[in-house]
Image (tube, rainbow, N blue to C red):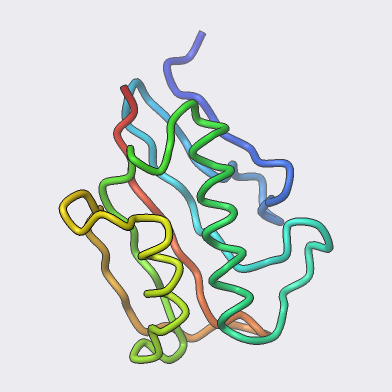
Amino acid sequence: MSRRESIYLTGFAHKNPVPAACRIGGYLASGVLTGRDPESHEMPSGLDAQVTNIFAHVRELMHAAGGSTDDIVKMTFYLTDYRNRDALNREWVAMFPDPASRPTRQVMRADFDGATEVQADLVAILE
């Protein structure tokens, strides 16, 4: 049996043959997480809805991997307007309310196709 474990989500899937994340031992790395609606699989218009969906995917991913959001050590966000962080900060503080126990975060500018305004990935250490 391989020590590498692919993590798939019911409400989120890539069009290409890749899992949502991969785990080796306690190390977990995600692929790109988008703001697609977990039920309709459509990309909603607007950054607020897309950011809300990304954080829902993060919660589901961490649960599916056998961990929690407390195990996340870094998240990277890619935004079409990287200075527009209100929605991101709102969800960030809701998920990580304790300033003394937040993962690190990086935000970078990106260009996407279609209605996509944000994507993210994460690294976590599971015990």
